[in-house]
Amino acid sequence: MPRTKRIGILTAGGDSPGLNAAIRGVGKTALGFYGMEIIGFRDGFRGLVEDRRLKLDKTTLAGILTVGGTILGTSRDKPHRMTIDGRLHDMTGVIVKNYKRYGLDALVCLGGGGTQKNALRLAQAGLNIVTLPKTIDNDVALTDATFGFATALDIATEAIDRLHSTAHSHHRIIVAEIMGHRSGWLTLGAGIAGGADVILIPEIPYDIQKIANAIRRRSKAGTNFSIVAVAEGAMAGDDARAYAAAEARKERARNQKEKHEAKLELAALEAQHTGHTLRLAKQLEELTRLESRVTILGYVQRGGTPSPADRLLATRLGSVCADLIHEGVFGVMVAARGDRTEPVPLEKVAGKRKTVPPDHPWVEAARRVGTSLGD
Ligand code: F6P
Image 1 (spheres, rainbow, N blue to C red):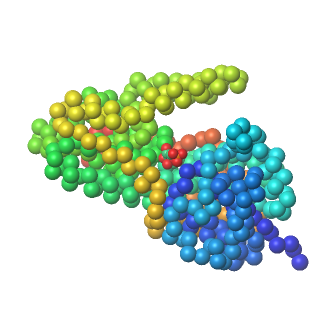
Image 2 (image 1 turned 90 degrees about the horizontal axis):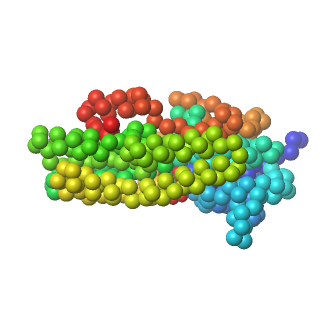
């Protein structure tokens, strides 16, 4: 009789709708279809270090498909830089030891770009790892989609829809800040779907005068309100150039000291960026003489029940994940490829980011319908 396979599962990074659907997809397939055992670790990689577990069985996996957040809890803790008693420690060795102590045959890590990097480190330390791509930002490399994105897109689009009537009634500019970290998928998607007049994304640095001109043109044509959808990471030309130069210095760094300096520079630029949306609205008010208001959508975009599209994506990626474990395929992320899936080696995914190509069909479509992209 072959021994029952035992797998661990954790969720890491920012939460996103669809995480529970994915846990259920992996869990039900592993338990019900393959007869494996499954243990959940709480709060990301920390649960593996601090021995905080949740046994996943028929009862714990029931009723979670439609629930937002993650029943396992999450954190941004990294295995190789974890704060314990106020100090940073490399806990990779402890994780490897505990993986063996629990008799795990595989560890499933659900997360975004950072989690793919951390998972690769654990795979290199000898663990059998399979990951799933989750994030509302849709910026994980080599997968068509990440679960969480579709729900956040619905929420941000509805917000833009609702802003239209109030902007129209008050003859105002309303600037809506949308999440996405350093990528513009969510803002571009919601901006197009919600009919924003201006869409600003990190991949296309903007010129404030060009945005003001677009809004003035609308006023001249008799429409004296505008909706500006701005990604949290969008930047004006000069700021974008300074950021790109610091990122290039980090990439080129020949030693730890140079890398550390570049990281400090990036952190300083990020700090300067804080409050950017408020400053943008103020500048537009001065340039156009239209009253401006700001709406920061924030964590509303990450909360609540996942959309049907995310439940579907998370369930099919989750069930394929259990198939791969059964087949002994490790060191991979389960990527979505149209209606199909593909195991992609973690080495190819880790450290890469999927950004919006400037000639992407969504960009072209936005331009065709007369939306200003601020360039
Ligand atoms: O990666 C998802 C995301 O929501 C980004 O869009 C955002 O920049 C970030 O997480 C916020 O992170 P935190 O939850 O740590 O504030």
